[in-house]
Length: 215
Image (cartoon, rainbow, N blue to C red):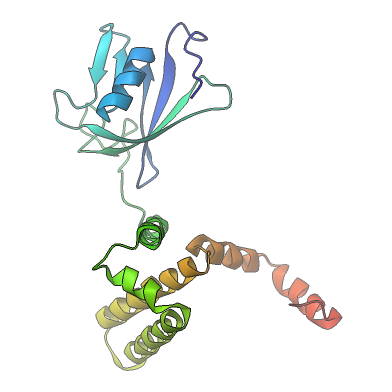
């Protein structure tokens, strides 16, 4: 990673983002020593401009930032640091330095879930239910999605909201496993739905159907 520490007198701004919620937590500054200590300890460390020394976030409060990844921008002079916060990030006690709540984005968790399922697909650990699904093959996985879809329909027509959520979650999980086995992601479905949300989509679809160009 090529970081231009000389451009701003030895320091570069470091934007801290929650790796899970994607919310921006704070802005700090790093010199080469702070950057290296962050890599070595996996705890986000800055250079304090007021105290003129290194400081690891959380060293007094216990609210550490566990490092997940670091990227440098196109000009090589700004860092994007993804981390897992332990407690409030701001010294005032708020989740972020802008006074915002760092709430989980449950929709974004679907992407995290597929990341986890993809690791299962790569590693195939013994004793894992997901591993068993992959070993059973596409036909069995597709059958399982159908079974869970049927149970979802039953709960929707004759069950409770709680059971509907439970069964629909099972269906979605097995669908993500099936997508993973075919080299697809849940984002591919989101992209397709986004495309269909365009007001011109239906007209384009009817035109393609009329012209016989629909796949």
